[in-house]
Length: 286
Image (cartoon, rainbow, N blue to C red):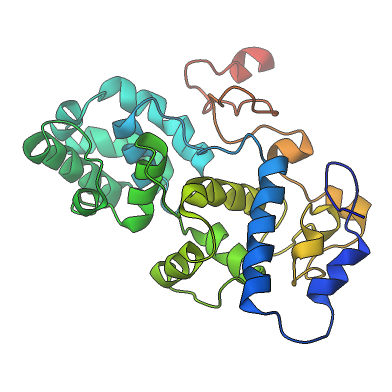
């Protein structure tokens, strides 16, 4: 019997992975990893970057701002930021104090403002005002590491890449696809398992799954679509009804993190920041 969250709860086939027995061979692990990817592709057929952006520059800025905060907070902050500074030239010329105030809600705003001013100036001066489309160039920009570069390359330039954030690293270790903790080592090992053409979407699907079902502290094992493939099944709540109550975002019928979700997204859009244009909360309270 085939297991899938869209039709049933975890089935006994999971014991083949979870149960005692001889160690899993590398070939079996690779096959399991690719099946995980296929199963997640069916569940999260709408997976996408959860930052609002219209072009490569907006995605780069939003990704830098997303460090140590939620994508929702970034999405609630960037409309005013992009309205004030729509191009690298505009942002490079921004008053630091005014920029810091605009991005204050995202936290670490002084360091982030310094990075945004620096990367915008470099894009203006060294790259003709256009975000570069190569890893070697992107990582030269202030505040841009491999993770940020892969987000931009994969989603603005269609260059395959693995985005090893905290969710991604946690899940691939929970799935026992790697034991590495260093992001670059995780990236290298997963790159040998998942086909290159799937790197970007595997990243999105894995991150979606980590945010919605396979949470760090309370994974919703009883509502997991890949329980049959997970050697860590049982670390979280296995009762189906209790597990469903742990689901987040659109899985729970709640808003996602984007104010402007892409077509086909099954949940409602996130609300703008309180008091921002488009926010009706104050009128509703009156």
